[in-house]
Picture (tube, rainbow, N blue to C red):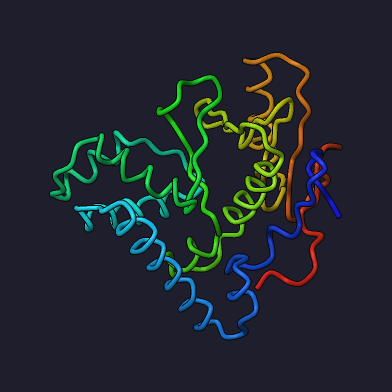
Length: 239
């Protein structure tokens, strides 16, 4: 089994397009998988969020959930969400948006990490408790790149240390944890090699230290650097 240098096997976290909920994994029918995932979403939102916290503005809560899922593995800011929701006619303060997002985080539905070296509450990225919840909402082909990044996030999270990410213009470094810097790439190619390496290079130039690199990939169209780790060593196909 591969790990990402932290002694944590990674492959069990990336089983299927439809995530790792046991009941979903065991179902053979695609429609049944989708039905179960939609049911999980409804249950989490209604019971674990709305009823538990006595949420008054249910349409806004639903919109925040939808926006959070769409922002899966992406940078987001409450300020941008506030302007977006305001243009849709929602009347709510930024404090309310922070509060409602906090409810989702408290239930474990999603996790957020901050940008390295910036104060908490500024730029952040979202990860979901299970990537199947993203897939069932998008109604398109699978996005294995996002699912892989989500799996790597939870593998790193299990190590028990704080995670962050780094962005400098068009260059991004997916994870910083301890002295490890981690980049995630679905398929390494001639076209994206320079982009993937620039995240490492720019971060190390800005923050000189004894960093240990890890480039986590599913597939290699070209040979990767010696710190490339193949994530595609798990039992069973991606379905």
